[in-house]
Image 1 (cartoon, rainbow, N blue to C red):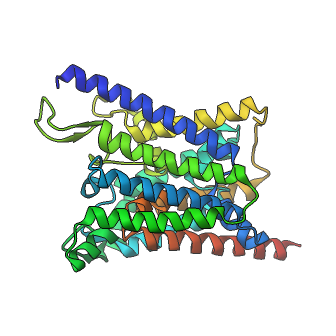
Image 2: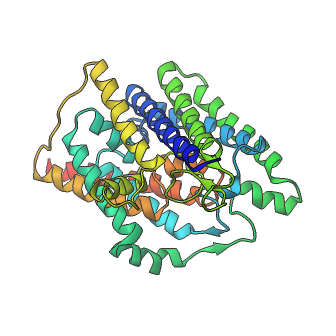
Length: 369
């Protein structure tokens, strides 16, 4: 493959990532897909509809990724979440911060992008502040604190810290068939539970579509946008990724890199990546859906208290999302689909943080009555 062909493939991959994420944004807005909203529905209303929607998405993503690995189309050991180190404390603490913050900010990273597309100026402020806090936690002052504290507590394994690899080593089996079996059973159970006795077919369809889009993102980054031998470096390259590994959808770190790319656009070292294209895609897709349904509305802050809550939530999401190495989509769907052992404490942290934040808001409301 020539340099020109690599450049053309990169451009096609970026366009595909943008289109994929635009569909994601439109579907998420049309079907009200929102992890924070799902948790809030359960805590405040006892309604599990959107949790079932998330389960459907998780089931499809899990089955799809497992099938990609079994077919040899994606290397499970070369994804963003593959490591022999389990940063369990980072995942848990980061998840707690992110979960608490997303309630204060009226939505997670994905929901924030969707709300920006729908005309929310509140969400735009959250997006900017979250991106700045995330970048500081990647390379700035809070990055130093993160590395010196929670990142220093971890478990080392001899194999990739994912459930199939650990079990395969213990049972002396091949990991790929075992991964497929686990994916089919666990993913199928999630989909079956999501579909059991439900009446909201639109919500279920949305969850299934979101999960399928995560699978397509894995295929795009881990199979299609891959050069086995780059003509300049002669190395195996995952094109247009910040990590140099296969990546799927996530919406905290990519927002940080998007702001960095915009601010230093003239720097030749700042390259457009799949993650940055995905951030733009979700906003455009959500905006198109909002305009098509005539639901686009400008929205501002109700007052200084509302602003303070959203700013605080944005900072917590930025710090927590990077510390946990993912958001409700990054860890909740993309990492979970790989059966990464670090995804469980991250998800537990996100849910616990969100519940605590909802309880805090309820207490504050009662206090002010």
